[in-house]
Length: 397
Image (tube, rainbow, N blue to C red):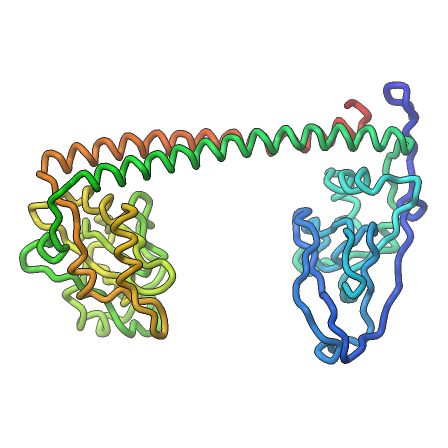
């Protein structure tokens, strides 16, 4: 078939690929690099380093640079790659098939070809099994399939054009992401400046509502209980988008001992244990009656400080640094309640607090709009590549 003056031919995969069955016996005293091939064209990566005596199956495939490799058990999910310049001790298990690519076929052309829907369908239609997650690649059947190929020089021209367009798409994506990061950095700088300009600071303990304490929650929650009390963990915390209901519930008898941290809605919640110390959330009204985990601390602002202002103050660079400085590491990082209570918080007059909140919310709205545009742009850019590849393999670029 001639396309734009160039002859494209149907080529059976078995005529341009040669199955590589080169296996090596593991030497007990030698170190090997075991690989995995990631899904959705994610490429090949080293999974682990093992000595031969640690490998149960003593026959393994030696990886061949330049070969096309496919996961037999993840083939449905586009787990294939071109082997790069890997060390000679790099191995793959029998769960992979490798193929040498004919000199008449540019390996980059074949790689981009593998991204197309026709190639994906050829792989999937060659898999056998009842359930998708357990479909296994059938090498012999797949090698009977055909692909369309132009001459080698045209393949190389097509690859150059695809990669030029792909680079432009990636650049556009990167520029948009940089715009978001710069906007977020400007917002953080503005926030830090506003809080640092406040000369009056007070310990957090003096800013909470009368009759309340700064308290963490249930120490030993026990197992999940279907009709139990909703239980708030660190992963549930969010300032703007908390879940309507947390995923876990605990026994009501267990919860009774922790009435002091039972939520009414509107409280500030702060992570005080683990890697996410300083993460801030606000309890929505739908959490009324729920309780919190030991890793979460409940704070009810008093009348001298605006709740949203205190949330922004907790998120500020200086306060987060104070949290990090006060954190102790025993079995795991922990922010002591006593030290948290003494954390100095900037406290301007209430009207100034509300002005600062309005200013920071306006900045956040701009960042959120940039992020929304980035998501739309990213979707549009992602949609361009399949179209580019479709045209490329029809000889239209």
